[in-house]
Length: 305
Image (tube, rainbow, N blue to C red; front, side, top):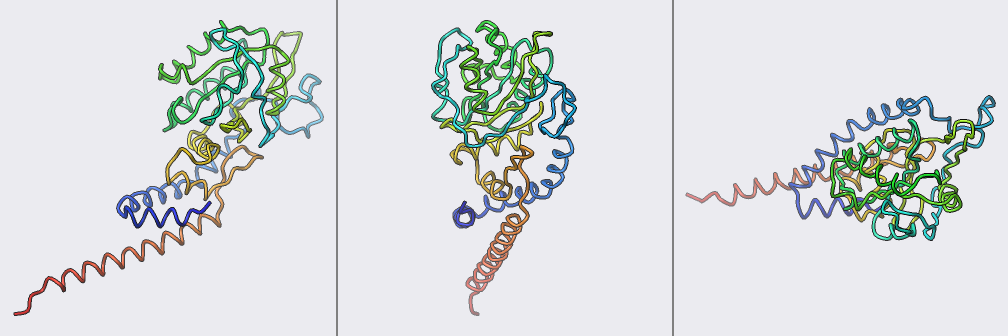
C-alpha cells in the first residue's frame, strides 16, 4: 500500500483536516497496544462450551473429533449453491455477492445456546460499527441444520434485526435454509466442520463469523461469540479492496496485519515507526512553513518611516 503519497496529498490539500486526523491517529496508536493485549487475553474465554480449535488434545470425546473451524483464507465459496430465503424463495448464494463484502454466519435455529450467542454477538457488533448494514456491507446467516425451514428463518431474522436496531436493514441481513448437500458445499468451503449427535438431536460445532469478499472469497475469520467492532471494520475495509472506509482506516491497515492464527489484527511495530517518522517530518516541515509565512507577513507589512 502506498500510504505515504496518501498522507502527503491530504496534508497539501487540507492541512487542518490533516492535523485533526493525525491527532486522532496518535490517540488510536496510544491505545492500540492495550486494546490488542486485552483482546488477546479475552480470546477463548467467551464460551467454555466452544470446542478447542487445536487438534493437539488426545482426550476429546469421539463426537468432538474433527469438529473445528479450519482457516481457508482465499478459498472460493460455491456461489451457485441454492438455498431458500426467509420468504421461501429459492435463491443462489451468488445473488448476494458482487458489490459489497459479506459477513457470513453459520448457525442453526434450534441450537439451545451457542448459536444464539454468536448471532447476538454479531448483531451487537454490527450495531456498534460506524458502517451501516446494507450500505457498506451485507450479512447472511445460513442454517446448517436441514430441518430448519423458511418460517424459522423469518422468526430469527425479525429477532436479530430488532437487536441490531435498524428495521430498514431487513433487506440486507438474509437468513437461509437448505438441503444437506448444498449446506455441506458451503461449510466445507469455509472450513466449518461440525457433527450431529443423534442422542440429543443437536449439533456439536464451533463458533465464529467469516468475512467474505464481494467476489465470494474467504477473507478473514473471527472466532468466539463477541466480535470487536474496530477489527471487524478493518476486515470489511480490507476485503472490499479499500473501496469503503477512510484515510485513518488505510493508515491502521498499514500499521496492523491480520494474524490468521488468532483471527485478529496485530500491530506491526516497524510500520508504526515508519508512519510516526513520516508524520514527524511532515509536522516539523509544516510548523517551519507556517512560522516562515507568519514572519514574512509581519516583515512585509512594516512600512518605512
